[in-house]
Figure 1 (spheres, rainbow, N blue to C red):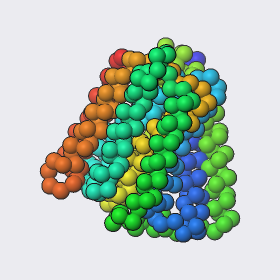
Figure 2: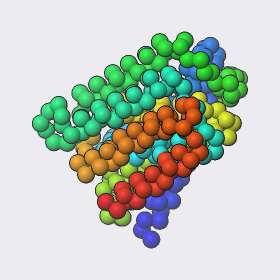
Figure 3: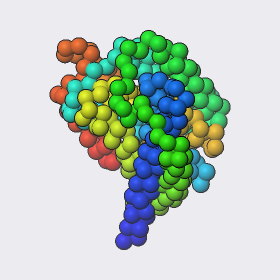
Figure 4: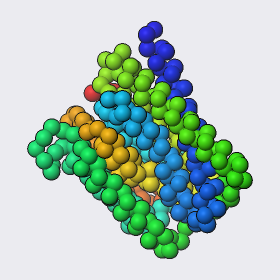
Length: 320
């Protein structure tokens, strides 16, 4: 019974995060259209970062409140869910075409990001206890800035554009500012509720903060990516479906973990190397599915395999 109230407040917090992220993305998208940003740039930057905002807010609040154990688990769990479950479900709805630019730039960037935090978390560069410190956080942020610079620089090479009118029209200034205001409020309230009650649940369930971050928190903070990709798949918009997943995964590591580690050193439980290996395997399986079958597609059958892989990941993480 003692866990019921924290669980309820956690769910309310997740709802506030999702609504806040949605409002903020809509408002920022409208600003981007008014600034004459291309739909592609809006999708790769505003939309991708917007779906990563719940991870960012939860991590920042947890670090400020002295519970950094959630941070790395949240990102590893979210990124694994993005590839295996979200991409898998999206492909089952509608087979996903993968562009050449994603194969050359975004998928390798995902591998590099995962490899970078693996080295940092396991003290490859120094001999202290397992943490990601502020210096390594600055390195992650610099790598993220480099990725965004490359994305803007190579924009002219992208043949795909986002035709969905949702990403190509501007709202009135009054509505835009109201959405931005509601977004900030929703994210703040959601961040407070999730960071406070996730720690209470970890104690009451006898689980470590990193395990709660890896499973419960990661699943909930990935809901914006799930919703965005499913809607895109239903609209047969492959570029949004896979771009949202790849962009969110890259920003989660470079930007979210980078900012989090500037607040407080992020502790790493070496047992989570198993989950990092699974994340590597998920990236490799995703890349393999692109080159099997006809064309550069992730088929419905391959989507089902990815989804089953996520079920196995969750069972393995909870068992451990």
